[in-house]
Amino acid sequence: MKNEDLKVVGDSGASHNCDLLNATLNWQIRIHGEIHYPQIMNLSQLWSLPTQEVSVKIECVSAGKIYGNKPAIFAGVTLRTLIDLVCPQQNIKTIIFTSEASGSCGPSTQKHYTALDYEYCYKTSDVIVSGCLNNQPLPYKNGGPLRLIAGCERYFYKSLKWLSEIEFSTKNIDECLGTWEKYAGYHNYARIIEKERFSPFLREITHLDDRGNIESLRELPENEHDVFIKNAHQKKDLSQIVAAKIKWPHKDFNDCLFSKDKYRAQLRGINFAKASFLNANMSRANFSLSLFREALFSDKGKHSATLDECDCEGASFIRAHLENVSMKKAFLLNVRFYPDSNKKKYNARVKGLDLTGSVGIDSKQLQWLREDGAIIDNVVTQKTPTEDYGYLPMIQIDMYCAEKHEDVVLKMQESQLFHKVISSKNSSQIKMWGYTHKKNDINKFLCELSVVYNKVLFTVSQNPVWLLSTMRS
Ligand SMILES: Nc1nc2c(c(=O)[nH]1)N[C@H]1C(S)=C(S)[C@@H](COP(=O)(O)O)O[C@H]1N2
Ligand SMILES: [Mo]
Image (cartoon, rainbow, N blue to C red; front, side):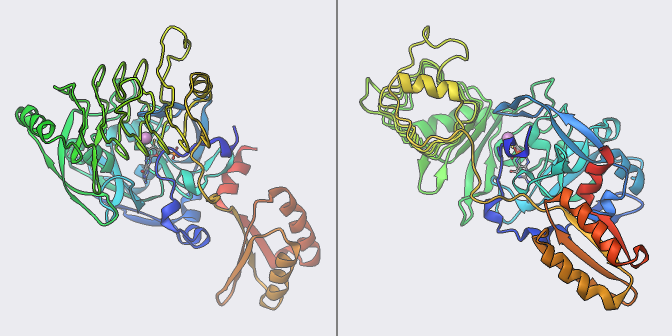
């Protein structure tokens, strides 16, 4: 599997405006909390620790096995190694992982975070901090230069991207809800074997920030659920509801607003089978993993609901009535309009269903949709980031001969092997970094360099990512 195959399911990082070169050079991971030896490490220090590979069949909470059965090979330092290094106190229960970036869910002023059980991190050797995927540097869009891989036993939302902080806590994990867990109802344990995808969850959005992200939520106790939902139905306004995995007491959503001003509902993992959504505005709302089996979105092409730009990751529309429904630019990773193996038996009603510009749909489903008269212009099967955020591996040359340093910088530049050459001086030593993807040509360049300059004059240390990959070869 090539790294281009690695889909971006979560935040692609496109909004971060990250200066990758500097970010990589200056990346730090801070390890703190109830431990004896707190650390702040840069990537070179981190990658000087023993590393290992883990093979993960990625299981996304809503989109399922996003790479089919192909495992992704991540390499990095195990949590256990870090734990041994920092010596946590006796009563540690939870480890909290924080990202350098805010999330696509939750307040935009708050950095995205999540938590894992301490015991699990210590016992399982496939929980790692990783900077390397399939023998290549981890692309920025997938969380590079540093990402947590929460191992094979946890859904992928626990695998935090752009990792910059690890905190050891004596709090119980139940008191440490992360961003997805707190603002979207994702399950806090995320054990795949237990199918812990979402927790039963019903909250009202009380505040949005200026980016339209949720800033605060009001939690509703279980005995108030029905009254609250009933009220919302009466007002035909569900736009401020975030819910997951609860039993929805009504089936009539005709004329309802799921989206109003900047508010948009998030209704994940909910059974809407046979419900009716005529004339409903469902644009930009989130329906991840919800079931719309035999639901009515249109009455033979009339009174059609609008679902533009909605996020329906993993949702099922099998046998739903979708004639003339507008579902432009929707996010449709792992969405089913037909059962995987059988189209004929289930007459999906998709004539005039407008999927223009939607993203992520499976190619088989797309073919059947086309045959049945859906509009599928500019449909793409993958979220494509506008830029290549893949960050560059680097090579470091340490010079011990100050006079020659300018020459070497020049040679590096002239070689055209490097995207960028940076140097820094201190009294006895000059370091140069060159960023490059051309690993094979570099060895030749270094040989030439050692012919001109005596080996004593310089040493070459390769970048963390290269170290990881050369160790295996
Ligand atoms: N910092 C950060 N990490 C994150 C997320 C996020 O929004 N922010 N999304 C999570 C979710 S829900 C998934 S499915 C995976 C997606 O990883 P990918 O984009 O590399 O496929 O990242 C996880 N890690
Ligand atoms: Mo996800």
